[in-house]
Image 1 (cartoon, rainbow, N blue to C red):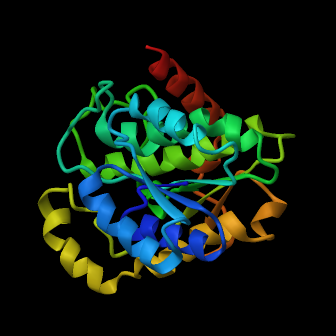
Image 2 (image 1 turned 180 degrees about the horizontal axis):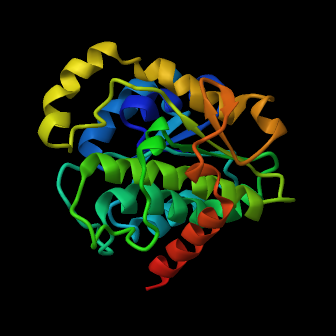
Length: 273
């Protein structure tokens, strides 16, 4: 299962998993953009090997519905690729009232993983792969202001914070899953030519088309996630951050296990509200 699978890195992750022989469930926010992507994949790999399910992560109540649809058809999940995410140019709220970037990019991963854990636990050798970013190095994460209610909104800083959250989440997730056999990692895909900045504003939106000239393509970027999903190398450890298919240390904040645990606890409390 690949979230945000209808475009960019997600589309290439779907292609790579289908090429490896998996039945792929491409998760799309909506049918309008999802259907053309689905038809391309089905033309390449067969109608019976790729399907689409819909889930808009801006409303976390959609995730239990996605799980109900998936679990009605399948009794296992080999690989969950948490990939959906974006950068928003203005301050927006999710359906649950969380800041949009944090809500989709972090809480979306959190709730997806929690929802699908029963099937992942039931599948020997299952893996969870989270798309993070080197952008985490620009984070000034304030765990007491995850919804950015105390500071003015900064689209890039908020995005960087969410990518640090992805790494911290992965570290605690690995600890919580110790002894289950489930492997989880996160990775930096690279600076990629995608629709990443489609919802941005200001200088980022203005200069992103120029910046794309110096970026790698989604197919190359997806190799990093596919390595974590498929390789024996990635199966020898868990809870790590990867860049260019190599284990790397994140910045000091990304290695702070106390903050990682606190983020987990705060996230649980927010979702219980």
